[in-house]
Length: 269
Figure (cartoon, rainbow, N blue to C red):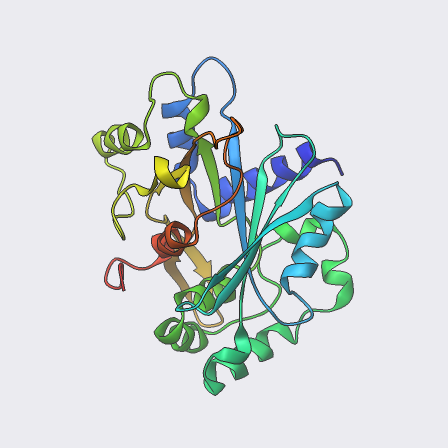
C-alpha cells in the first residue's frame, strides 16, 4: 500500500460512513486543481491492542515520523502528529484516551470492548478505515457518553478518519478561515463555535475551524441510532520567522476542535 492508496481508502470510508457532507463541501470549495488535505485525525484508546503506537505503525512503515506531542488534560487525551518527508502528503494527528485516568465503570466498558481485538485484526493498514472491531450496546454507548464523548465516539465508530482538513493556504477564492466559514454558513452548514468559530491566530501561526459532525446511522446491539460521526476541518498555516509554514498543532485550538463531535445539547461543555 502506498500513502496515496491509504489516504484514498480513508477518504472513501470517511465520506461514506462518517461524514457524507464532506463530499458536498469538497465540491463547494473545489477550484482548478484537487483540494490539498492538510491533515487527517484518528482516535483510539491507549490500551495495548489498539494504542496510538499501533495506529501509527502503518504510517511509519510508509515513511512517516513523529514530530509533535500534545496533552489534553481536561479530556484525558494524549496525541502525536506525524509528518512524511514528502511535504505534499497530509500530516497525521492521532489521539488516544488515557483509559486508566477515567472512572472504573468507563474502564470496565472500554476494556471489554477492546478485548475483542486480536492481533491479526490490526496487522495491516486496512484496520485504520475498517470501522468497529467489537459489538457495543446502546447502554454502553450512553454510559460512555455521560463521562467522555470521545470514548463514546470510538466505541460507536471504531476506526476511520475522524476528519480530513482543507488547506486554506491553497484556496484562491478564500484567503481567510473566516471567509470559508461564512461561505459554508450560506450553504446551511453549522460551524463549531466552541472557543469561537476561528480557533488560533496568525500569532500562533495556525488558524482552524470545522463543521459540526454529521449525524450518521450506527448499528448497536439492540437497534440503529443516529449519532455524531465525522466532520470537515479547515486550516490556514502562517510562516514562522524562518519563512517556513508552521507544521505543528496548537493544543488550545485542537481541544475545541475535538468538540465538533459533541451533540448539540452538550456542545461547548
